[in-house]
Length: 230
Image (cartoon, rainbow, N blue to C red; front, side, top):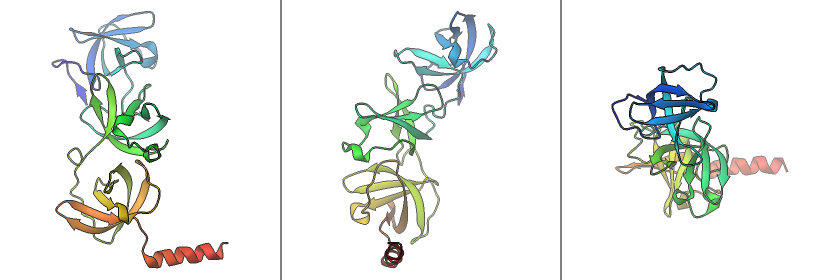
């Protein structure tokens, strides 16, 4: 989403800015009130001239300063997106690729206390951007994402474990359907971002619920295959 010049510039959004001047290491962009630095590395060898108008994403650099990039972000304020986990820092949280040179942090403050339930590198998670003195990622909730998609009972669907609570799991399908799985309805190791299969077993005014435990018949077949492969 590209914003015009008639609003306060907030990191986390793309704005149309004017090239004010060239420096040895980059460019100075302006909205006629504020100035923003665009490093040469963030211009991606695009031909830029003074007085040109460019679409620039504003973010905080490693020193906490507001900087600009011409790279197109995968996540902006107000538009949730699915991002990939690219690294883990046990002291900070997990970092996710948002399409620019700097990854966005999914803070440990918003992750389970049990680090075994943290996302793994390569996992895809549906997140929104939060701006509080810095840009961070946080999982979306039912207010952010709603789907009118109907899922027939006894249907098996695939989804991502979205959050883990004392009562169980919330799974979000690729069609943005929420499915609750009670702790008694799964036995495998779980973590946020893990893709799982769940059978939808019930629907109420609160939404869908399901089970990740295979039916008895299915388990017998699996055991038989395992026996013949020993």
